[in-house]
Image 1 (cartoon, helix red, strand yellow):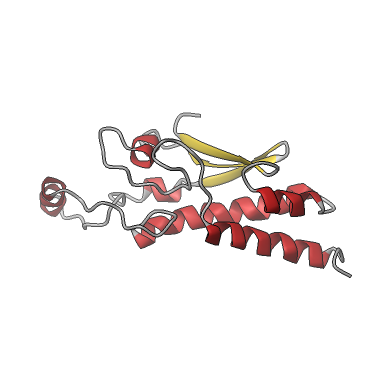
Image 2 (cartoon, helix red, strand yellow; image 1 turned 135 degrees about the vertical axis):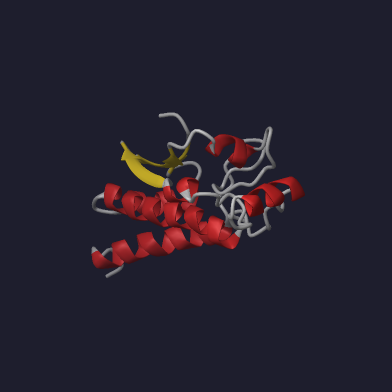
Length: 154
């Protein structure tokens, strides 16, 4: 796949969440639910015009603003057509969930390089995954709900 993808191995990057997921009757259900939640959170960064840690993205340059006005387009950052934000998906691969996009220009925006660093995935500029606390808490809530439904806390 051309584009950009991140993977979180539940046993390492998600630590506590990984321990909960392994307690599920079918961890794939939990991974799928968490993957959906995280892909939705990545999509919301475009609405918020901020990275996963809630820091505002660098504003558009004056030249970009002039070109967009000439073309009759708005001033939303990374939202010229909406293709990038709408392309974020999640997929289960074995015991991992992959969240990513097949849009070829995603990586430069996510990691910087030729364009300003404007992350929409929980990866720092140096390429290190860094799951925000709110994302981790949201994932834990999802898995706890699944475990409750399965009677794990009875």
